[in-house]
Structure formats: C-alpha cells, structure tokens
Image (tube, rainbow, N blue to C red; front, top):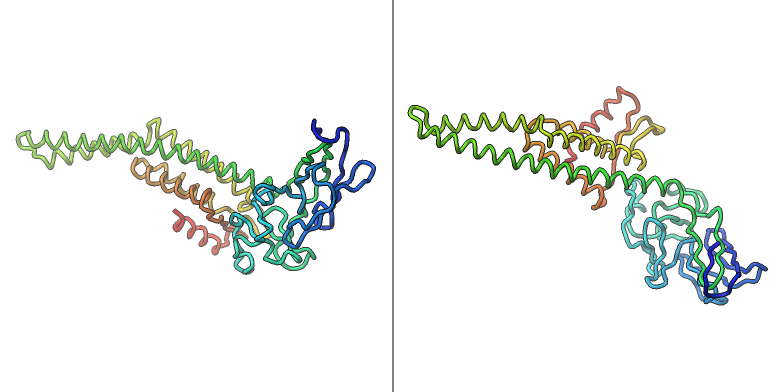
Length: 343
C-alpha cells in the first residue's frame, strides 16, 4: 500500500478487473464506486463515469499503464497507440512463414482485437483459445497494491517468465557486444603495430640492400618482409594483446551462448537439441581468432562486431539449428551453411 500526502488521507481503493484483465472500476474500502471504465475494442477509454481527480489512476486497458501526456499505453516491450491501433516499434520476435498475419510488424492483435489480444507487445493470443500462435498467459496480477490519497500508482502486474527471459537474453547479448568491441580495439592496435613495423623493416632492409655491394634492393626487401612476418606471428601468437583478445573472445562466446539459451534459441526442444545461430557464429570467430596473424585477427574481430551490431540494434532475427540425432546430416548441412554465410 502506497501513501501520498495530498488527497484523502487514509482512503484505500480496490481494483476490479473484467474478463480481459482490464480495470473495470475502482471502489473505496466500504464498496463505494468511484471510477467505472469502458473501452472500445482497441483500448480507448470511452466517456468515463465518476470522480477523476481522487484518485488519479494510470492503469486501465489490460492492466497496463496509460501515459496521458503521450496518449500511449506502456505494454512492457512496446508502446501502443489505441487511437491508431498500432505499436510504435517493430515486433521484436520474428514473423512465422506459415502465418502471414505475423508479417505485419506494427499492427495490434492481427487488427482483430475482439478475437485476439497481446498482453506484452510480444505475442498475440486468441481470446477463445483456438487458432493463432501459442498463447501467452494473461497478464493478471496476483495482487495489486491499493494506494491511498489523490494519486493511485499500483505496481504493474508481475511480468511473465518470458518477459524476464527476454530481458536476461538482452543483457547477455549487450555484454557480448561490449566484449567484442574491446577485442576489436585491441586487435586494431595489434594490427597497427605490426603493419607499421613491417613497413619500417621492409623499407630499412631494402635501403640497406641497395647500398650493400652484391645484395640489391629487392633481396633486402624480401629479407625485411620475412622478418616482419615472423614478428607478426610472434606478436599475434604470444603477446599480451593477443592473449587478452583470445580471453575476450571466449568470454563473448559464453555470453552469447547464455543469451541464446534464455532467448529460446539453444537447448532441448521437442525435436531434439537446438544450437542458436548467434552462438555458432561467435564460436567460429572465436576459433579463427587464434590464427597468429594480426590483420586476420582484426578482420575477424571487425566481422564479429558488425554481426553483434546487427543482432542488437537493427532487428535482425535470431535463428537456430536443431539436431534430432548426432547423425542428423541435414542439421549438419544447415550448420555448415550458417558458418559459411553469416559474417
């Protein structure tokens, strides 16, 4: 129970929900009705009844918070405009090829809110339990605080476990992005050092060969190139920078694997064992990062960072490869396709 200094002191209010989980009314502690709510199909509050100043309630359609200044509902994953019947941002989950209604990335509840609803801005659920994507449990709170005074600010309903899984996956995905960005910076420094050293060695030995009797510029440059390559291998294979890059690559792979696990792309499924596409790409680049050549390391780090940017900021959907058995050659073929295609 939350208390406020303004308004009616000591007054408690109770929420009453309709069959869809929307707030249908507020009553005082002795049952007196203070607010009654009615909604159109898309969630707009119809002309209200009752006192709208005590308390000031923000939670209405499907139990979600209404921002009176923006004219939008906060659904957890996305903001929703009930006047236009659309979300303000793209659907975070990939569309289903066999369900054309999921291809529209902004419409609310398949543009059929009488038959469907979307409690989190994440997945549409049929009201009658028939057809459509797998249902999401209704967003009904186990308990709602009953604040007193002029402003009514109940806690939002408890998020479903899927909500938490997505947040955890996003945290680990951003962690992998940060680690890969640091690895890219270190590999860039390493490549710059080895390239500058190579230019200096080749130039110096070429000049020395040209001035030495019986040697020549080209043999001198060739000797300088061989020394530069040996130095590059030594720096890229055993320097502190190389060791730090490899540790960061392993840590980024672990973070990506956890992200795929919580996002539902990796783990046991009804068909078998699934491996997330992001985990496969990160593992490939981590292994290639052990190649003792600084420019190759830099190119691999840049590729991984570019892939992370697409995963975290451009809405690129994830993917997975499902193995029904260790001898599932079709799955091995798809895995190889991912490793060759995704850069």
